[in-house]
Image (cartoon, rainbow, N blue to C red; front, side, top):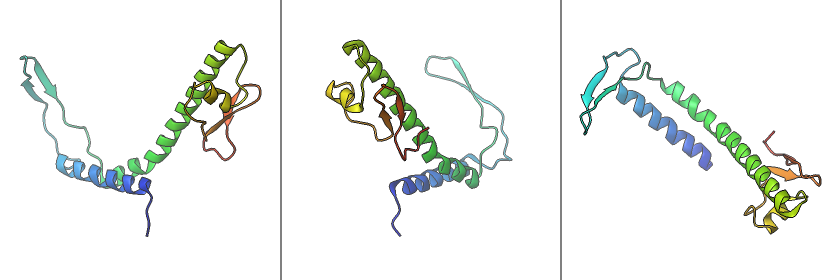
Length: 132
């Protein structure tokens, strides 16, 4: 069975988080704050986590990671295109009518596959894009 890079990353993250949870002790273990001093003599107080999650919790977090990454990519693409469009308007006195205008003006390196720019200069999700 061939797995994608995202599946491998999720699996690696889940295994790493499970190992971290096992190393930290059970969710029922308790200990008091640990106080010590750092290199300059200031007192440092660290508290253990209130609850260490289970393997199921780690898998749930890892499973949600690709969706959060996609949301972040959509946000960054939209913000980049909007900023480049505003700069294009300032420099040229007209709105860009496509991403090609922004690439040609060297305001972005390459066109986004997630968004399009309308002839009126609006940034909108591309057909089939996961972005809203």
